[in-house]
Amino acid sequence: MVRFRQKSSIPTFALYGETPAAPVDLLHVEAIQSRSRLYRWEIDAHIHRGLHQILWIGSGPATIALDDDRSQCDGPVAVIVPPGVVHGFRFSRDTEGHVFTFNPRAMIEGDVPATGQALRDLFAAPRILPFEPDAAATGRIDSLFADLAAEFSSPDAGGSPVPLWLGRAIVWRLAQQSAHQARSATHGSGREAFTRFLLLVEAHHREHWGIARYADDLGMTPERLNRLAKAETGQSALDIVHARLTREACRRLTYIAAPISKLAFELGFDDPAYFCRFFKRRTGHNPRDYRRMASEQA
Image 1 (cartoon, rainbow, N blue to C red):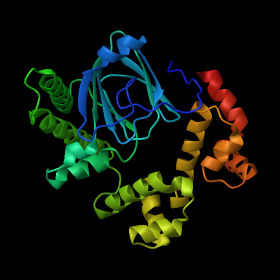
Image 2 (cartoon, rainbow, N blue to C red):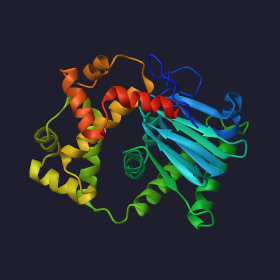
Image 3 (cartoon, helix red, strand yellow):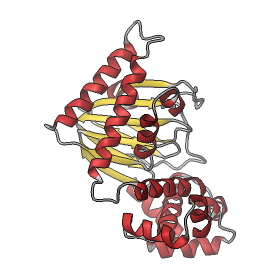
């Protein structure tokens, strides 16, 4: 299992185990085996600031932690890790695949708008995209990652635009796959507006924005925003905001060894007692019990 060792803070890296500085032109790809072997096949929970990451698990098992969600799966799957999402992995010696890390500025500068839109859609939330082993789409994605790794490690890779082209192709293909898997959701302008709402929630959930403020920033009424949220998820807009705040609380209680009152203030609650009531209403557990259970599951 992925271990959830509590620390005073969640470590931040550009590449796991290395400096947290993120060069604006960073584009890096490596085999899963190459780094995980150094850490006995376990990548402990950490964060990337300003960096996007895609793990392509072509074959073999993996245990995946994305914020407070833990999953066990077998390849082929693509793991989408937006900036700021706590993630960790446990691989098998037989797990094969690649880790693609990049700064989005390098990906979209000078490109047609399609890449930027694909990037926004794909990284709107952390997710695991499953693939059918024998599907044509799976073969295309696997080949793109293999070609990207080969181009990145070639002796004449310096200054070559090919890794960037291949990286853009991967982002576009995976965005298409994600859209295909969510085919039953609302499409067109409503879906685009909902994606923008999710991005606003990601940026401002700790500021406790009211739904009216989210709606105003999106150029719509609160009633329309609620209808949009209901059509996409079956939940109200406020439920979505509270769910994101709850996920943030869960991951901090899991990963950060700090007093609950301090975590409450960091999450924008003026009253720790109110935070405890909010958390129990959302999860069925008080924060102290949740932290103990998360520790026992590690």
